[in-house]
Length: 203
Image (cartoon, rainbow, N blue to C red; front, side, top):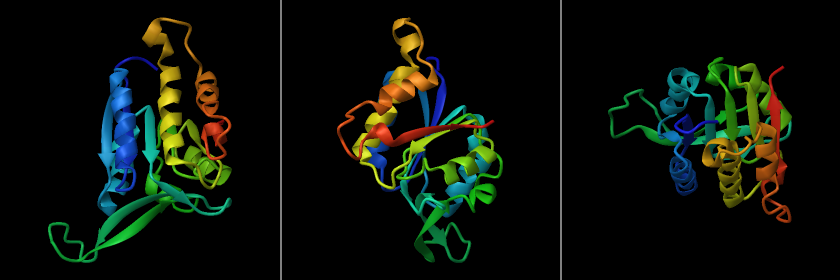
């Protein structure tokens, strides 16, 4: 990764503080961050259809739920009952689940590059494999059904700190695997810490 590379950061109403902290750090390291805070249901599908193909690196920070066979990245948004997006009425909260069964219809083959998902449990094989099938080359995410949101923030900051080592101090660059191990090793004693993150690559 090089200085001034562009990264997409996608979040919803639940992780504004943490995602803005990640954004601030990445921008302090001279990356360019395109920040997407999804609010309406159409924002989620719109990101994957219109924006996702433009980025070599995408970060998603939302809640994650589901069993091992169907883990999901959960986008908390509002939906419009009458399809009148200019109306002040007809809105209700909903959750759009990006899981193995919805990945094809939601992502639509528009994945590209590396997806770093910070949602709980979103690094389990069933979802990672589904995302790789939708075009992502690499998926990183936590395999445990729960991890701490501050640990997720720390993981992201440390991972990109490692990736930027080459341009930061002109030292020998960290590979993705080395940056991952650096980030996984932060606070190894904490049960809900970064050590649960796994990496998957498209073959």
